[in-house]
Each structure stands twice: as structure tokens, then as C-alpha cells.
Image (cartoon, rainbow, N blue to C red; front, side, top):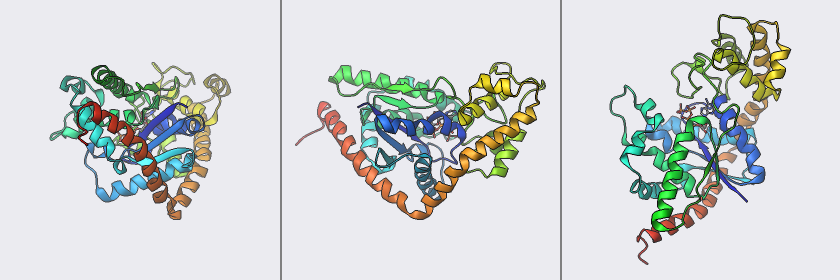
Length: 327
Ligand code: AQP
């Protein structure tokens, strides 16, 4: 059975970009693979966090995983900081990673641009991400397009380690959808939708109320024409709305273009509001129930135990090859 690993940072409210690009696919993958889905709360610390909020968001994200359909009996659901083997392996991988290759990471450049006191953690976190993946011998990693470069680094590190020390790691493949791997910001459809974009009008979150969803979609930036057509180059706003509609409604983009032919952007937007609200409402209801049930901490505890049992096997093999096992 193939192994799959992925994660989401508890750094704000999960967006429909995170959902459509990654989490929605986790639910399908848990049926056919040995799956590990984590909440990457150590990665969150690459930028400043409020500890109380971070703890709350971590639990809320675990509840959201379950609310969208992840089943702790099928997939291992855990928090990254509960499995210390990740950071130990990350250190060892840092000792084979090159300074220059980390400096080329686009996310590092984007997140550090114009900032003072950029942390070493922001620079080295792609190596921790590599450790997260390699420690479970993952074959596949379902991610959005923004993570492609980090996955390349993970593959390079795995291959470098294997060629220096003998076969140890599975070299993972990214699983990036052909469609919807990059949901764009509603306020600026030339940039990706993001949890941490400064304006709340950039994103729809999975916990937004129907009114918030309506306001954000109706305000979404489009263009000065009035033709509904899919063309991400010249019509990024409308193309993004069509993409979101298609992924939520299950209707093909061509079908939607046909259905809204000759109608204004307002009609498409109103229909999209209904589609998104009706998809998110049951998830939000289940999310609320899970948060009051107290079940989540238990799931994370059991998940961490299962994850540690797997992770410690790989870590032992690595330490043995590197001359670090003494007894
Ligand atoms: N806009 C997007 N479209 C499709 N997929 C996306 N992902 C992120 N944004 C989009 C995918 O969501 C997963 C979880 O992302 P993450 O929490 O690890 O952090 P990120 O990639 O940096 O996403 P954000 O939303 O931009 O978070 P912040 O603002 O905290 O940095 C990943 O698989 C990602 O590809």
C-alpha cells in the first residue's frame, strides 16, 4: 500500500485554497493509502505566533480535518510537535543540505522580503518539511503548487542521503492536481489565496459565515468586460471564480461557461455564493460539534503514538548509518 503524508500550518483560518488544493484530496487518499496527516505547528513558528492562539488553532485544525471527513481509524492524524523524531531527523538532514539550495527557496524569499530579523527557522524549515515526509517513507505528498519547490528539495535530500549512505529513504512524488492547485486571491487574482494575506478580502475561510462569504465573493476583483470566459491569463478573476465553482459544484468549467453565457458577473457570483455556503455549512456544523466534544485531543494523542512508532524506525536506521548508535 502506498504511503501518503501531508500537513497544513495552523497559522490562521484555513482557506478554500488550502481545502481545494490539499485537504479535500486527503479525504479521498485515506481510502486507498496508508495516510499520515499532520498539523504542522512547528512550521508555524517560522513567523511570530501568539502561543495561546497557536494552541487553539492547532486543535481547531485537527477538528476541521475530521469535519471534512478524515477518519482517525483510517488515517493517522497528529500534531508535528508531538513527534520529536521529526526535529532530530531535520538536524541530521541539515548537515547534508547546502546553504545555497535553501537560499533559492521562493517561499523564503517571499516571506522574508522587506522584513528585518528574519529567523533562521524560516530559512531552514524546508529541511524540517523534508524530514516530516521522509521519516514516514512517504511515496506521495498531496500539496498545492506553491509547495512544488520544497518537494524538489526533499527529493534531492533523499537521493543525496541514499547515495552517500545506502538506500534509506523512499524518494517521494508530489501529488499536485492539474486543476485547482493554485486558487487565487479574491482581492488580487494574480497572487495565490493565502491564510496570512493582509486583507481578509483575499480569502474565504472554512469557518466564514454565509454573510462573510457573500460579501467577499460579491466584492471579488474581476475585469471591465462582461463576458464569462475561462482564460487565466487575460481574465484571472473570472477564471478563478469559475475554478472555485467547478471544484465545489462538480460541474465542468465548460458547462458553467455555457450556463452563464450572456449573463453578468453578478449572476455567476450569486450562484457561487450559494454553492460555497451549501458546501461549507455541514462542515462548519460538524466542526462546532467536534470542538465541544473533547474528542480531538484524544485523536491527536493516539495519532502521535502511531506516528512515533513509524518515525522512530526510520530515525534509528538513519542514526545507525551515520554512526550515531552506540549501544
Ligand atoms: N491558494 C492555494 N491554492 C491551492 N493550494 C494551496 N495551498 C496553500 N495555498 C493554496 C496548499 O495548502 C496546503 C497547506 O498550506 P500550508 O498551511 O502548509 O501553508 P502555505 O502553503 O504557505 O499556505 P498559506 O495559506 O499561504 O498559509 P500561510 O499564509 O500561513 O503561509 C499546502 O499543500 C499548500 O500547497
